[in-house]
Image (cartoon, rainbow, N blue to C red; front, side, top):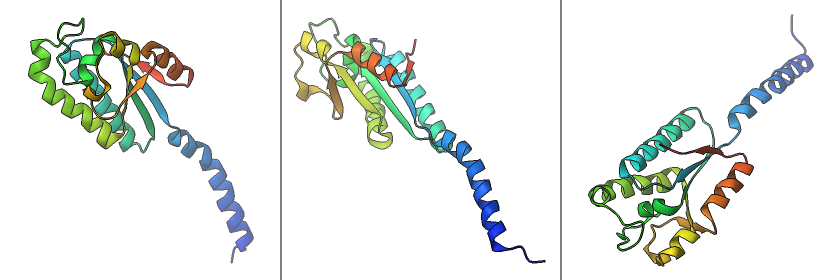
Length: 162
């Protein structure tokens, strides 16, 4: 017996309507902000690893994402090659030894995975660091902690590596 095309169309329509909520749940963009206000290069490395793992998972699950790192206070050390001598944020030997690796990994997250970097302008102005000395892709925000609060109001999950 031949099924009328009307019933085939109606069945397909019903199935597609039933599947839409499941696909929309997967398609919802995941938003995460990482707070980098510390000086420890080991901790920064752990944060970069965490972000990379998150991106790998999201991409394998076909999930869109928006990941930001907001740098405040000592975090400024990770967005410049300047050693920040004679400032409260001066780079130590451990950072100088690992800087090339850390900056390369950070730049890869920006260039390949579109992670966004935001730096507290209060921190930058406090030590009078020229904006030209920041890594490519670092955007200034008026206040890092205010920016984090704004992102949380916009449904960003907050993460800080300890």
